[in-house]
Image 1 (cartoon, one colour):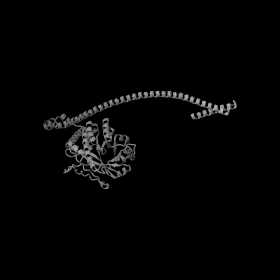
Image 2 (cartoon, rainbow, N blue to C red):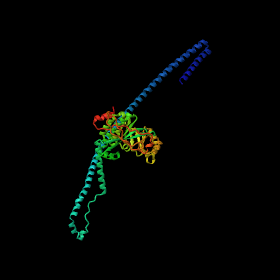
Image 3 (cartoon, rainbow, N blue to C red):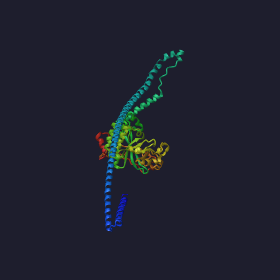
Image 4 (tube, rainbow, N blue to C red):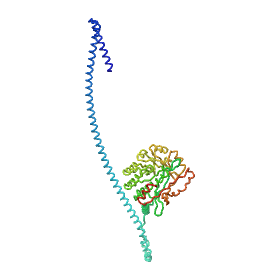
Length: 488
């Protein structure tokens, strides 16, 4: 636009100068040369005038632009100051909110600790009441015999008194009768106390055994992981399964000690396994009581911190109900394990109401679902189709493991659901670890006890290999360090 106006002005100046020369030549009678000189002079003056006027106008425009720029800069400075004030106010609110949240968390932690103390006191009082109930129920039975003896001794007097009709028809006093419910409660209390004593003796005397059950790939059935199954032995070497002793151990506060011992031995087993196969891993169960016990968890965390190199092959397994009922302390401990590279597995799944994103954020990498729950949608209690579950979990880096597989038909059906791993008696039952045979080298382990014969053994494509495991020995801290370091 500026160029067009400049061109127009130049054309006008040329026309004015030419017109002035023509007027002087035609009307004033001046020669053509003089008229051309006058025209050029007028054109020069016009050009100079236009240049000076444009320069003055440009200066005026620049001054106004500078004034506008200064006003805009002042406005921008005021806005920045306002934003700084608002940011300072927001930071103050955030700091106050964080401090208030920390105070609330501390108060909640204090209340939880008080509740824990009250629960322990309640458990102790319930145990004392059960003991009193057992003693009171047993007391009438001991007093019944002395009451019946006088009637048997004083038979002559009784025969004399029986001659009176009024006395003869009077009914004899009935012995005290104990209610069957009270007897059942007393018997259950006695059995529970006896079982608790057995479990406590097994833990204190180191009668904790580790059984291994393989987790295989499907359909190749190649052993990829082992699950460590805990068994206890009483003083008569009778085996107690997890269903038998877990309730008593939780009541007596022994689960944390059991999990700590099992964790130590599982790490030893993993070191032995990785000598032969670097791709193998082990699943170790952890109870909610272990995550909630600050002292025992600190010991476990120190031990796992020292073995972070094996974190990718050491999977900690939790129940679905335990994960859903985690409190703030347990969640913090779980996050501490995840921060050190350890991953988790979920078992004892009762429904498929699963949030894969939430589980992945917590560090869960495996989910064990019973084969019956996968194959029967009516038992799943969820809108997720079992055929889509493996793909849905895989999007978040979680592998699906079908457990409790007992038939070949179930394997065929599970392959249609894209299940990659399987576990159950069809592949192998949990096998105990036998004590190590003494040798000159001191590092050769005896093979485990043979597994029970399976009726479907002929249908298997290959035989599962069972590792040779070093047994656990309680010979002090030095021996524990040597076992944790593995074979030389």
